[in-house]
Image (cartoon, rainbow, N blue to C red; front, side):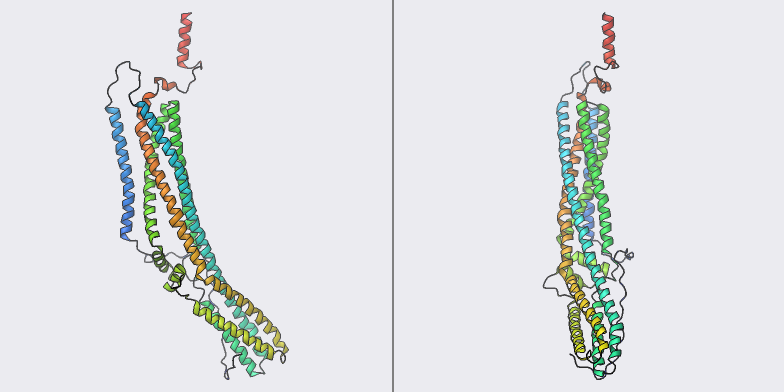
Length: 452
């Protein structure tokens, strides 16, 4: 037991820390100065990639327009009475069918890429939620422990000092336990490093999930639209329906623009994401420090989590552990010496022992929560979701956009020649040959009656 001080100074109550704001609240808007300035070279590269997609769209439209103008205006005149289709029309039809089948295969690639991208973003969101749970649990555990220690100092230790007022050395021992409890509370308050941070990981995860939900839905609708266009074009060619082919040709032009636009967006995102994934630690550390205001020691400890980076909370944890051990020994000494002489001291001592046991349990939980393994694991899971699954999905989506754009461009060039194979009676394609209201069947019936 520590020797009592001959002149013990009165100790004040344990300072109650400000209750941390719940992490579910939306953080205040950041100032324009906060945040990192994007690298001009990367921004120019992203604009260049998006411009390449626009250039591809422009060249496709120019090529299709020149081809259709040449087909419509530069065809050799057909001899009168010729009923045979133009040369190359059958090859154009099969070329269109092959291109549409390739586009349908690209749709399968697009569904896989969309699923992979969604899985990567979901992994990022789950990692953010788990990190938010770890940080909020740490803050809440610190708050509960400090509050419990403060209540013990204000109630049990004060009662114990009043009971032991006749023995100066026992009062000094009780006040020594009070000082140690205040030291523990003071050190534990410094462990709640996240409660004053304006950044809410829960809100970030909600925003990421919200954007991803609409991105996934938009791509599903685009994939279904491309699939319907390809199937209806094949149906129009099979039924030799000119109105259906004309309608799908106009819709194919719209889908071609959407395919090139999605390719530009996917390519720019993939370039930016690959640049980020080449060295994510430095960028994330600087960005987090700008947004949260935390020290670089804390951020380096959690983002790097290796032997080269020391635990910034080790000193506070060591002092708290020593103080808890001192309190335990002092309470045991008081229980041996004070209880036989002052039976009324047994109740506050038992209450203090219970508080000390709970505090030690919370302390061990805090040691586990503050270790870098948990948050670094979440950080690694978020990076794997972005740099593996999401990036792979973006590459497959780019392949889908390229295949669909090529297939639709080929179909737009091949469909006019395929029309040459349609029979002249295409206007009545929907009528059945045995239908008595069919004009051709009515004409045959009139000729048969006149011949009788």
